[in-house]
Image: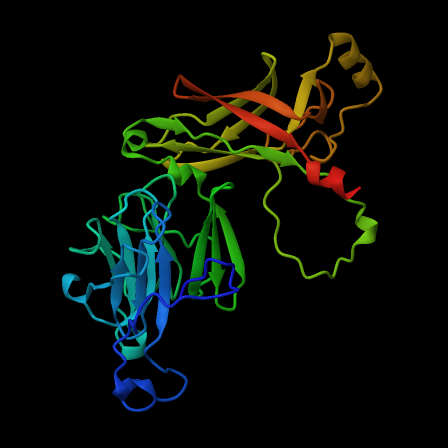
Length: 378
């Protein structure tokens, strides 16, 4: 059904799109207990064309309409080795009108093979893109909104990612627990992958570097990804809050900077932050091949004059602040030398960051934003 009045009234735009098999409606094959078939399980409208709808059902049907429901085409016979199992997800492409994805889950039939397909011609033909995915039911598939080759699937165990349109898949489990992934959303502004699991909560991952990981980037020796802007959050008075609150884990403090190395570097990777051509921070990163992240704590250091350094030495200064005594390691950076440098928070604004690796340099800009939300709450 379709509503053009925010749910105040509805119009029927299709006949029954399921098999409506009486044997599986209430009793018999697969219809006992809490599983009653003949239900639409997934519906997605193309973000490129209103009225282009893809539909999947729990008894294995896949339909498409290109005219807002006036006519529907059953696509089952076009899908190779179609199991006609429970359709767990249909996903319309953000990039091409005729492109869509469909996933099936067969665990209710004791079949744990992965089933993921892609069409580029409105369902006339389909390609199996399950590739190297291991055994495990597929619950959801998502396509990135800016990179058509970047795909994510959620299984009964974890998240997998493909950077080549489903040609191959890589585990994204990282520090996530083993848990059924029931749904995923890609936040278009934050470029975050939001993962909803069964029983283990919601997980959020910054996928901005993956969206930028094109074949051209992979062919380079090193690449500095475009950093996302960072809000300098104003911390409230902690005395107003209980330590026993049921809260989720916050994202790490600081500006996240990602980089890619195609091979191991002979030396560590260095990031230098500049404010008006003046170096104010230096962060070192790992030199192993792969994608890495470093954090700039949004703190700047300015070298003191020789006179001031001598005065502090005579006065016994130099004990580290947050980094610990004697200038011990600050957050995300090298040891703090409180005699040589004065440390303070970097103000809101734009900064230049230079990545140096194996004698080569790459520049990016980072932006620190003001906490406008805090000002509104005051």
